[in-house]
Image 1: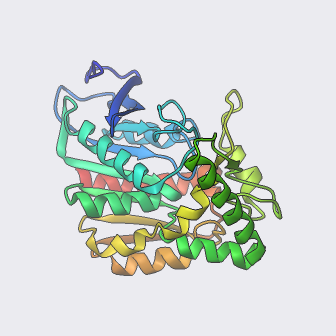
Image 2 (image 1 turned 45 degrees about the vertical axis):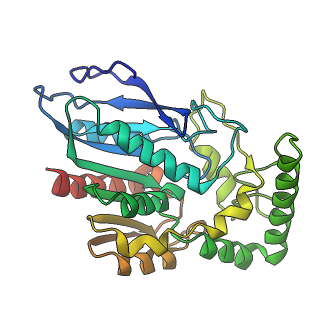
Length: 307
């Protein structure tokens, strides 16, 4: 196990195993712990995203408020191991979340009863499923959450046409066929320009998605094409009623990637849902005034339920 110093205020590089594959993460303790157990927020990005894509701006606010944070990359992505690269399989990412939870529970100076899951976009749905399965987390935060893959696919059909879905599916079948014979993976863009083939191709997806990447970093804007076949079957909304902990759902009412209607339906099923709505698009919450509103609401929610 990685050596961890709970008295350090410097970001620590740590790692844990998920199904035998190494996932790497950033661990931060709050500036003042007094060697006492503190709450922790486990964090990960959305569809094809990595920890470098503006997640630390949230973590720093949580650290300043007395919470530790663990930001990890899924297997196949970012600093984590796993081949083929950029292979997004929802069930595997769920396993990575459970592995991160298990790791957090053995960290020094962490209160095991005060662990929150924080997910944005695709991960906003993942944390719902993980919380339902785990049953012990103290709270979840879902920012602009993708809670119904089928609804997202239908939204693509609405704005891009059924032909767009068929093209993505064709690429997916080709990728699966290649994997069966041991050939290298076949890829499609994670975010594409309007009218082009990609997992996300709404009018605001391409430029906004790439805007999340730091200027001094490179990012592989692609996922294995088989992912396009799996996402419509990923439906965290089915697990919503099983989430017994407080759950913050931050819904972007102009969202073209993760339909707001699906998040609203999920909220109605959750016994302890708290809903906040923002009149912005899917990618707007990472920047400017929308970010400030979103992170402020997250802080208020986490302080209410973790302290």
